[in-house]
Image (cartoon, rainbow, N blue to C red; front, side, top):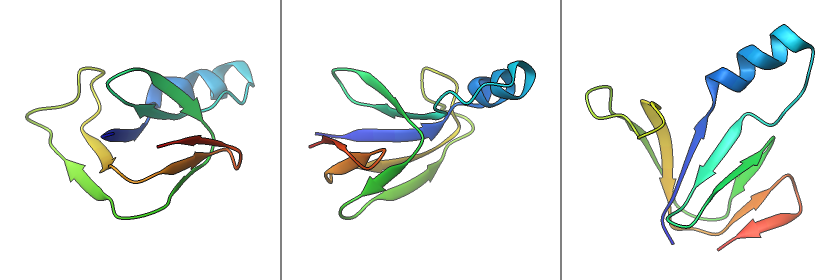
Length: 78
């Protein structure tokens, strides 16, 4: 399954403003968006910068991988 991983700048700003610590990493798949504070990629990946064709959420930089990933040290996405 193809996964796109990016940092959500809006959550970073909200955390700073509100004194919160919500997860800022978004993992997008064809089925869902999952949020985490830590992501480990167990295989190859590619870092993409595409300012003229951002993701639907507005991200211009992201990591693409089909490898298994571990979120926050416990949850996995194949």
